[in-house]
Amino acid sequence: MIKVLFFARLRQQLGMGELRLEDFSGTVRSLCAVLCEKYPQWREHLDDDAIRVAVNQELADSDAAVAAGDEVAFFPPVTGG
Amino acid sequence: MIKVLFFARLRQQLGMGELRLEDFSGTVRSLCAVLCEKYPQWREHLDDDAIRVAVNQELADSDAAVAAGDEVAFFPPVTGG
Amino acid sequence: MDRIDVREAPLDVAAEYAAVQQANTADGACAMFVGSVRDFNAGSAVGGLALEHYPGMTEKSLRAIVADARGRWPLGRVNLVHRVGPMQVNDEIVFVGVTSPHRQAAFAACQYIMDRLKTEAPFWKRETVRRACGAEEERWVEARASDQAELEKWG
Amino acid sequence: MDRIDVREAPLDVAAEYAAVQQANTADGACAMFVGSVRDFNAGSAVGGLALEHYPGMTEKSLRAIVADARGRWPLGRVNLVHRVGPMQVNDEIVFVGVTSPHRQAAFAACQYIMDRLKTEAPFWKRETVRRACGAEEERWVEARASDQAELEKWG
Image (cartoon, rainbow over all chains, first blue to last red; front, side, top):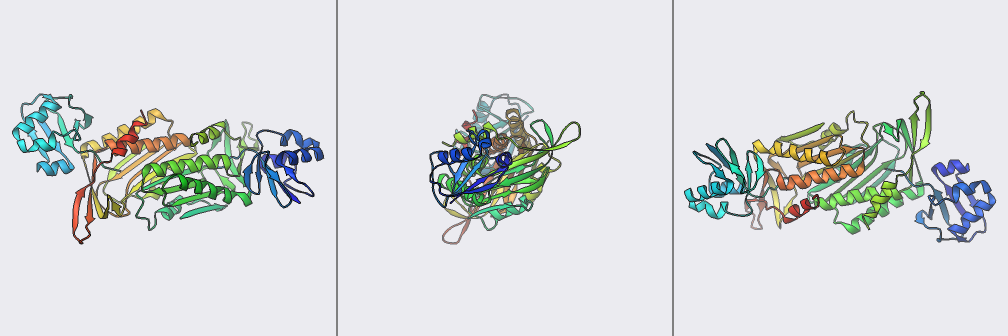
């Protein structure tokens, strides 16, 4: 099982902060494709170069591997400080 | 009259913090020459590239003009902060 | 040697400064940065701010940034405090304090930590802005391209 | 907008920070530097320090440095405090606090002011050092070539 998290504006746009996905194994890019297939209205928000991704709480790129037990977070550019 | 000041290590080396000079007009360089002529033992301390000069409380170089009423200070490199 | 604190409670700059200097007689230099809530941003009057974060990742991310700073400069103490949750205009959002025997190292590390934090640490600001008509609205603060550009100077 | 203070009294960093932030809601960024008396310098244990200065020129020199910083960056408040006279290990010697709407401007101006101060402001440090045999001696602190080199980066 994969745990997927969304933060900030993206969380509000998707109307969801967290979901769980059974039986996924692939890359961040393919995870994103699976999500957009399941929720077509997410594509415009999720399939955006500005969106950043963390795998297991570390920044990652779209080629990063994702497997059972991983936590994947999608979020807009950060604005702390 | 010119007021001449010495600070920090230079003051201790010359054994004097302040002196007044009547009837001087020239540059910082010629003032320095006049002082070294009057006090030959000052030459090794005063005629040193590291020594800095301020004329009327602003940093100046050896070509700066000095005339009656001016205050000239000689001091080692600064070490504040 | 490092203190990293992510919290809702107000930030006390005097206490944070005291923490980096206490019993620290080896470091002659301390550089600090404080970021506060401004009353105006992107053309609108700001009434308040809320900071969302990614609880599992936030501290990990800050620790990694501080560790990288230590790999680059000889540092004594590093104290990094970031607030989350709701706050008011003029409240402090972030404090970074760095000591070193060397002034340049303290300045560089303090600025480096802020530049990395601004582009990598998972915090998001949402402002309450007052419109000319008097209505209040909430909006997410936009990331600035200049923050990304600043990061590049560190190679 | 500028506060410049040269004094014998101890330096209170919390109060100086409060002075730059009080009723200042426009500037989101505050960069600060504090220089303190170290317990070790150039291979010797330091017991204390005395700062001599050139009273007529000191404040004038600091004002000119701050004015030049304002000519280079958009700054809000600048607060520059420098102690003179005798002080102890861990005492603060200098405080520089700079606010700005922009983080980079605050950092750059704070560092610029310190770099100029270190090479131009008429202060001289004399340390009391303890030698291995237990005897104490006073010595003038030597200027460092690196301070002059740092200045050159500002063009």
